[in-house]
Structures are given as C-alpha cells and as structure tokens.
Length: 388
Image (tube, rainbow, N blue to C red; front, side, top):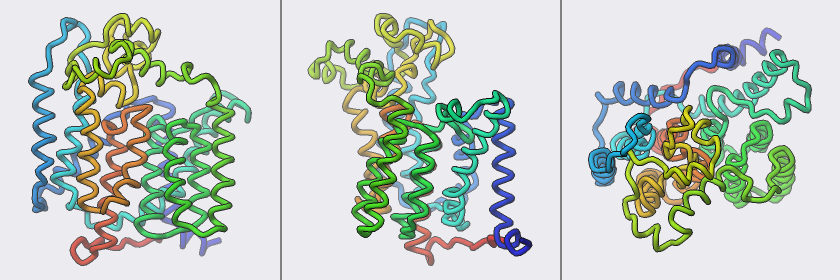
C-alpha cells in the first residue's frame, strides 16, 4: 500500500484537488464560462516575452474580420438588451492567436498532463454523480438521465477530452485499448449527442489505425455507446423535435429555405442585429434559456455556431472560419493530424459554440504544442516533472 501511494501520489493529489474544485462549483454555482479565456489571456501575457515566430498572413485576415464586424456591423434598433458580441467575435480572436502563438509552447511536459486527464475526467464525472445522489437522493435510474460535468456543460468538456485522446493515440502513438475504453465510458456518462457525433468521426480514424482485434472490440464498445445514448437521449425521435434542428429550421425560414436568399447576404446581418421577432416566436423559451431574458433575441439563442454564424457573418465567412483554422493547424501538424485535431471542435459546432469556445480552442492549441514537443524536442524542450 505505501508503494502504491508513493508511485501514484501526484495523481491522487490532483484527483483530490479536482474533486474539491468541482464540489465548490457544484455547491456554489459560480460563473465559470470565461475561465478558459482568462487562462488563455494569462498564458499569452506570460509567453509574450518568448514571442519570436513568423506571423502567418492569416493573422491579417483574422484581424480584418474581427475589426470589420466590430466596426461595420449595423447597429440594432433594440438597445435595451445589447447582444453578447464578445462571444460572437471570439473565433476571429482565436484565429489571430493561432497565427501568433502556435509555435510558442510552454516548457513543461504537456503529454504527461494529457495522459493524466484521460484517467482523471471519468473519475470526476462519477464524483459529480455521487454529489447529485447525496444532494437529491437520486437513484440509479435518475442518475442515468443526468449530464455530469467537471466545470462547464459537458458538451464543451467532451470536446477537450476528445482532443486529449487524439493527442495520446494519434500524436504520441500510444495505441492502448485502455484509453479507448475510457473514452467510451466518458461518452456514455456524458450523454452528449454532439459528443457522440464527434466520437463517431474519431472512431473512423481509430479503426483505420488499429489491428483487427482492437477493431472488433472498438466496434462493440462504439455500438454500446450509441445504444446507451440513443435510449437515454432518444435520438430515434423525429428530427424536428431536436432543439438544434428547430433553431436551424427557424433561421432558415427567415431566408425562405432558399440558398439564393442566403447567398444574397454575404456578410450576414452583423454582430449587433437581433434575431427577427417572428423567428423568436418559433423558439419559445429559447431566449430565456440562453440569454436570461425572453425579450432578448440575441443570436446566441440559436445555440449552434454554424446556425448563428450564418445569420451574423453570412454563409461565406461561416465556411471561411473552419478553413482558416485548418490552414493554421495544417501548417504545424500536416493535413491528416489537422483534420483529426479539428474534428471535435467542428462537430460540437453543430450544437454549441465550437469555434467560439475557449475550452475547445485550448484542446486544439495543446494538440499543436504536444506535437511540437514530441516531434521537435531539441527546438521545443519540455522539462520533465516527477510523477511521484
């Protein structure tokens, strides 16, 4: 027993710290949405002294889009409830950061912490369910319908976790079945439909990379995850009952379901415009759920990045955003790893912020940093830290 604690002491300490942090957030319901962005700002400030990479031309494209939409978007006639345009503009900020800091990793062994998080996160989800059981005296059937989380809504956390898996499996080349089993456990516990979509695409890459034994086991586990979430989230229900589909259909009705009408608005309606009232009326309670006020038809109520970006930025810029992300990541990692790395972010953008979410962006940034540390250790040294 003493040797076990000696060997795994650091992991146990981090696990206890994470469970304590989650317990505080769970009991206090403190605002946490901008924590990843705050951490990002602190990191950029810390690493500014080491900034020495060549600036990608895409930086100027991202800057032009950021400044252009901020300054040139038409003002909304409804000023009582201004839009949360900071969230809307975040994809352009992230593009600029990737263009400036993609080759500026920290001098710590990120791969060690990624491996640790693969094991930590499912344990934290179980801890969340334990707290729910204590607080609500919930039985197993009730717990199976819950969406456990660590700090944020688990749609965001699943995206980051999937990136941790792709780092370990595809970048570091550690093709352990254990890690895939942990991923399936997380997908099942989280009960996220967008997480399941991301998982399905990652499975395609996974099956091409492993032998027949792992293929067969992987297929069995994937079917288990689909069956469990399909029953729990009722994914066999009519498509038009899914809230994200309802949002997309409502905004498409504004364009009379016509591609020509969508193309006629090359830069959308800008970041200050409200969703038209008759569109809001088709989505009862959505404004209240997502903006805190039923009279505030902020496009954030549309939830999915692709849906609200099409309205605010226009179809061309909406398609340009993932292309710019891909070009920046491809420059560092090659096209194959760029596709794998961006798959979770691109998939979750069908449900929530995706390209405008700070935690999802951290997943992409850390993927690049681990790749640089792994493939160019002389140029990007990572100081090893003790695991004890």
